[in-house]
Image (tube, rainbow, N blue to C red; front, side):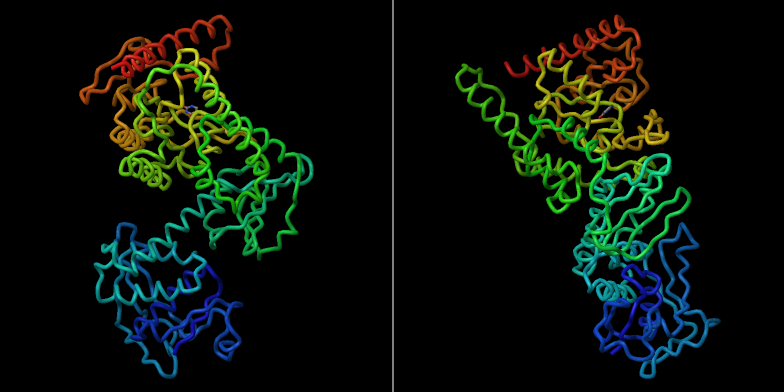
Length: 522
Ligand code: URA
């Protein structure tokens, strides 16, 4: 039996060195146990098993991985370097021949780097099991149904999800007063993702000094580099401050009872994260208030004669196949890396609305508020849009609302994030999502709000003023209405011009309303 002790829970290099030595020495997976320094039972604490020096780490497993130096390579060479110190793997194990090498697909290395962050104590063994099989069956990574591959893919997916949750749910509290303030957050990740997630916070909050405290490990940013220190108890974290109120006010302002879907909301913001979110205290009362308002509305509507209408279904309750498709698209888009905008953004902001909406509204890209909330058009431009839609007689809840670009593009200016217009390569990189939303929802009418939306929807740069005010027929049978973006109205400095442009915007939307009424009557 070979007992390997790794330096830490995220010691990928240690695992790789040890695994190479084991494979080259023909050690079957069943003959290996893996532990992390500090976690192992007393039994393994004998001489020769000091941290970082398990039987194979100790064996100076100085094998080289050529993948890291060959960016185009799809193979990693797990080779034994003869120039290294003697590879006396263990007394009862044959040393690998100096010329022995084996290749593994680079995809495996990528998968292993992610899956090793999972909290399952068996992860090192699962990885070694797959590595062992890849040696003789290098095509295995292509077999998604293989139980070893599928298990590790699922673990890697859990890591990406956990990373996404950390990006979205870390809430900093301000300690001290400016200019000496520091921001500290407490977070409890499900897996060992702090080192993976930390660069995001360094990019996003580059101008602040911050610490993220967790039970496993803490990350600190001083404006230049991220440093890590051991984990701490929750009692070390600050509990309250003036930023709490900001979060609560913001959350209450974006909470829209008309769009309340408790299950979907809890899927996005699982209860286990609530205890560390300042706004969590609001969730229950806001839901109760929304339910109360909805019941009152339903009761009131029951007394009025109503024209039968086409049943609009919420996303989670439509035909099983269709609903899964839109949900699947949203899930896939969470990991979109088609351009670099995902890097500083909090999350992908996907479209929202009924699966079979007749009308699809397309904006430019999420703004600051949308980026934090993960929902389109919930900030000032969204409020302007809601007002104009209501005035035109359109129920937003019956439309599908999305953006041409699904990540927030900005430049940090102090604590503010200044909106930046997406460029053509970014619009093109993101168009796949618009196309897939379009193919899934099949709306009759698409409203392109602003130049970016018009460029994405019509596939070319399209002047707004020349094309607004009438429906443009498309080859696929949809019709497109081009109009201004609601934030254009917000930016107009002159009140008279603002009122005039707002009216023109509402007039454009009335064309949509007329179309909807016709469609419902038909
Ligand atoms: N502007 C947009 O184009 N989309 C949003 O979601 C918010 C602001």
